[in-house]
Length: 140
Image (cartoon, rainbow, N blue to C red):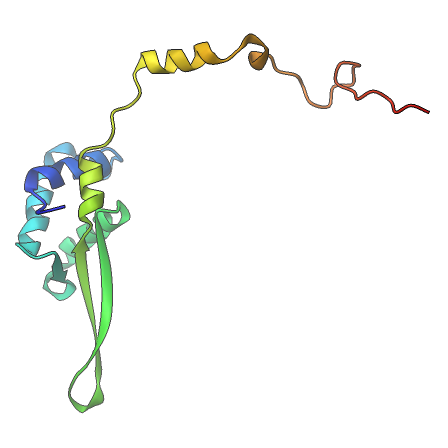
């Protein structure tokens, strides 16, 4: 997948965060623009450039599968280790969320029910003690 557009990320946000009631509809495009402004032409952004509020938003997007985070350790002067935390766009997940498959039509569901035979619709109560559900006695 190529570049993630504002339109595509907006639609992915509508189909995830908005659909799950986590943000209002009117915030979807603003949020998509805000997120992509951090990434620019890159696929990765360092966590330390985010404000606390934006970091919370990135965590929400991670919960929905639209972003992911990673960290790595880097050795610096005097043998100290710094942990670098960064965020990545999950382009395939964004594309899938922006363009979900259409739900089955009512005709398709009706066709499914038409294929089920009448005897498959009947329901026997398990544990019922009548001769139709008890196995035959073994011969003596």
